[in-house]
Image 1 (spheres, rainbow, N blue to C red):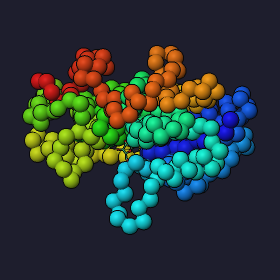
Image 2 (image 1 turned 180 degrees about the horizontal axis):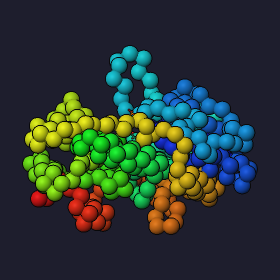
Image 3 (image 1 turned 90 degrees about the vertical axis):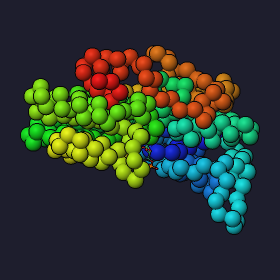
Image 4 (image 1 turned 45 degrees about the horizontal axis):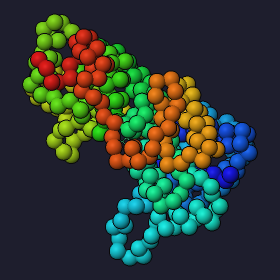
Length: 340
Ligand code: F6P
């Protein structure tokens, strides 16, 4: 078999471990040929690919980013410019066939799985591998990238405690997660955040102010507020600056904000992400060797499973408001802004 691999959407630690997992399983275990496609779906549109051999795959387990490059190209999204309209899906199918591919592995998040499903509907043999620091891909308990970003965000929050304590300040830190609050919830609990704001729970500004004032009355020297970038707030302001300004105005407390941004997407993957990415990559090849396509590999309990792409596309996995960790966090007196 001749298989193609592409990586699309926001990058994250662990993608190269997944490429390695697919490549080594395919080449060593199944004697397949492997082609790396550049810059996500753009590489298939523009015929930018090269054969990957074991040489290309060595030394990349611990390497952040993606050796193939990525893009947010959405081939099924109608072109907004009127001239030289290109039928991108048609080009992708043409180049897939010209390259002689028997299957294509798409490593990406929600948008990538949606495109992957559409290409499967068009007759291509597709397998999806879920990755994103947001951990918001439907159908799997976890995506690789999330654990690495959690380590980075938690380390940042740990560091904020010492400077907040030195200055007796209220520190606001904004973490990524797109429309989901997984990173904020997990890093907020791991980092000992006092307030954790996630898009899934509507917050009341007066409840936040009263909570902080109670902390001052209880002689707490400082507070840490972890906010997800996707929380509701006035437009044209980052979540962190909106919350920081609101707190300062309502309570008079001295606040400062930190936006962690793309640091959460960089660097070497955590051990757990290396293992998860390797398992996902290997499982993807096993599925292909059995002629099973139109599926996304996923984690369920201790097992690596697969689910139809049709079930995944267009869905978001958000934090359930009754999630066990939210309940336990409330026992630790964490405020989510929704209860007095
Ligand atoms: O999906 C990963 C992610 O980092 C989100 O958390 C964030 O909102 C988005 O990508 C940023 O997109 P871009 O990399 O295109 O700026």
